[in-house]
Length: 258
Image (cartoon, rainbow, N blue to C red; front, top):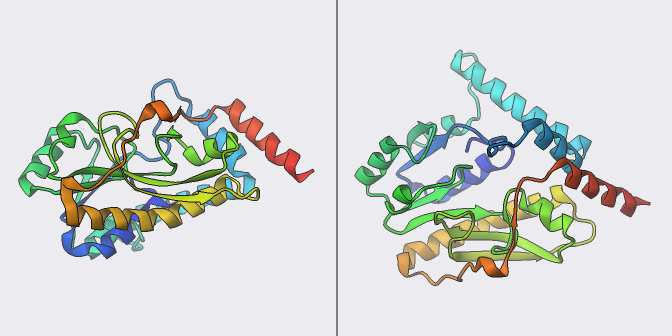
């Protein structure tokens, strides 16, 4: 996922730390506004405005617009963007641009390259055919302590439900959402001063450490790596926050001030 807010820096760091072993990077079309059927993008954006707060929301909107505009200038040969695409090319790593990672063409490429491990950071649900290709598997970063708070926008739900701790999980993927076995988890206690934005910041700090730790374990042990069962019966699943839930969250924050 080509996302200038947090994901691109996360991916770039993984590439830098593991460059000798990176066979390629696939950039999938779509981004954080890719929603399921019958989901309103306008409602989602309004919900994010309430969850993030005015300043943080518009700061991220401007960053995204600026990033996208820089890529347009890049195509016109007027400016070199700091895009993920340019970064990958500068590192002399094979780049693929896809609409769907489940496509037959991409599956054929992966089989030909004999890939050991895929790190997934897209919003697409990966199907059985691609999951079975890598020798070790496909792993994912999730901004919560699964099996609790699987699904969308987990830092919001952690705060919404007044939970005492959260963190980051690196886990294998299967055909279900955030239900694969856990390789690494990093936890932290939630201070009363934390809001959605500060939880996200802390999550990404820990995610970099957790992902590299998982990669190192998989290099050493492969499929025999010790994992923790991700038992959904002991957890919870959250969908995209609705406007009502975002509004209630903002009221809670407002009451704390007074």
